[in-house]
Length: 308
Image 1: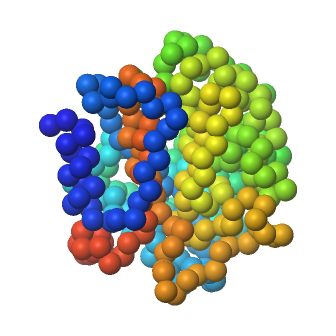
Image 2: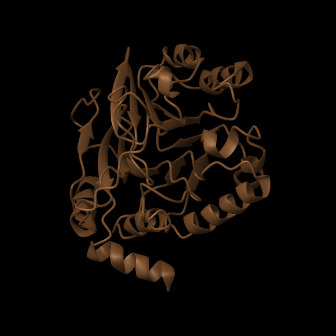
């Protein structure tokens, strides 16, 4: 069965509704004939261990998102968490405990492959020491059905940089790729200067983008800003994912960055996860934003299965 047919089925059966489909500007058409189409799920900024306002269901949103993904009739090729797996703490023992708890919950995903990368809440206080103990390398690469994925760490260094060593690694990593190979970058902070006053940038992000610039099809998936956001720098596309703990305001829209208040009339508003459908032959992705929907029947059933 072709992916397009399967996709219609799982969107129908998942019943989550309210998702926003974003088609990349690199969309070229004539995509249905590809035999290497696939989809993956991005979850971000779970902040496991966070307590208090504005999220009265801080211990529930991550399990509910996992249940929603597990309820898909067609499971993703892989799931990736793009950082801030846990909420920051100065206590190294507590930091590791939170990571273990998060790992146990994420382990309930049905997907065969789950990938991780750190956020500053996970790694900036100890340069990624605890994270590496429990999840492995903070930067790495892999290939999947015609797309090369480069995972960048722009959080372990407290200076909010990628760093010369990792930039050299990125050059070497990409050197084996053809210039028209689709490149997907997974990272936590944005690589461009979205809003530096709110720490929504990477100080040497321009150097990373310069390494990526020679490749014709580059898409960056990131988190950190707790909201869906799309930007193009040159021909490189950047897509931020929503958080699973609380939304943040649009860049510079208010004097001070602070979590958006919980809306009792619309719980879980601004929270969600993303399905990314890849079309390697066209070098692009189709993004479908999914909300947290605890009332959905399929999600309820999957959640009961997780708890049971």
